[in-house]
Image 1 (cartoon, rainbow, N blue to C red):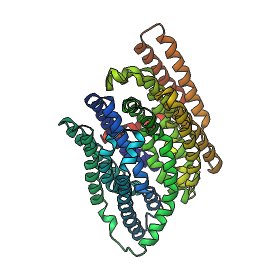
Image 2 (image 1 turned 90 degrees about the vertical axis):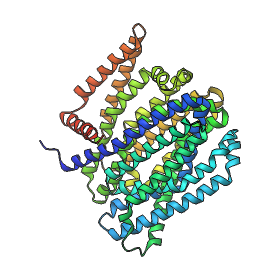
Image 3 (image 1 turned 90 degrees about the horizontal axis):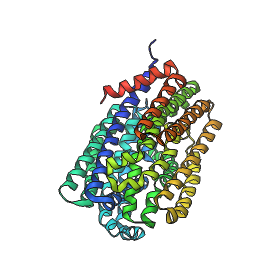
Image 4 (image 1 turned 45 degrees about the vertical axis):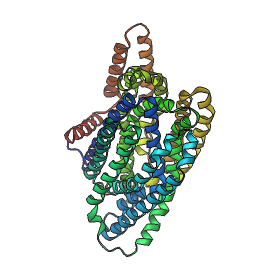
Length: 489
């Protein structure tokens, strides 16, 4: 039986986004382990702080404009003049806000370095300031192509950024420029990909531009709500690294970053799905097609769990071996930290992350804000309490607890507000079975080789998943998604 057109489109879209996600993951797994070996834990820690500061600066530099563009071009896709006004206004705002944020970062570079008690931070902050306008513009460009569901162009841009960044960072560090060279690689990649994105979006910059100021206010109105929610989310997901940098030393940031690098697998994969569910939710909600919305959400959650849970089990079973292989023996101390972080990343990656913007898609970004603020406050408080006493393991516990609480709150709001039914029973079986299989692994590994025990446990879980928890249609759709991904590599 032929697959319905909406499912085929969803499969194609996911395939393209997975391509860019896979390239980004490979780039990250290539860059950070090499930097760890070339620069040591201290150098990797400083590089990770630079990435974190760039991400936090991007919040203000973009102010949610990219998400506003995504939402409104999805809703107004047939009004070319309005889209032209949205794009022109959005790109202009991105550059202006990015330049202003870069100026602030440059002005306060020394107080920021003092907060971390790392003078080296002040040396690379001017470079980050230079990158911010271009990074903000690039983010808005990707929002445009995501909103119009031109996922092939979106994947091209994201892939270009990942490849250019890894080439420049490794090339500059390889010739002996150290952490500064790595940061310059980030800056040059940001400039190059922003210009490429601007060129590819040139056809949206024509048309009648009267009313640009009104569209700018519209973008900032919704963007402001998303900015606050994004800022809270940043505190929820990045407070650990910032506070480790404040309380501990650069080497501890490096060790923790090794664990974080590995768990980035988890948000990356369901985030690829979320990039489709966000604009699709806006479109389906505007059409009052609740049946299609429910079907999309349930499948997005289920198929993400089918990938995330086995991956989480594999990483937990072989945590020490993976860290030793990628980063070297010096970083094995982060293996317990990795195992703790995997708990929240697996639970969220198979449930809330693939549909994480549905509340914003139905016009309620304020709820995302409330959830993120609550969880961010909890995260900061727990990190302040636990890091001085337990080091990076305390940071992992604080982040895990906060993320799980935020996920439960998100699901509660989603079930209450949307006229849909989420199949929580299926997820209970999937995660419960994973817990039993994990127990099987720990039991077997006590008297046999842990590679053999882990392999047997994984095979058992995948067999149960495919044989008992998935329908024939589910298996067919998953096969189509994997096939779509393979064809686009």
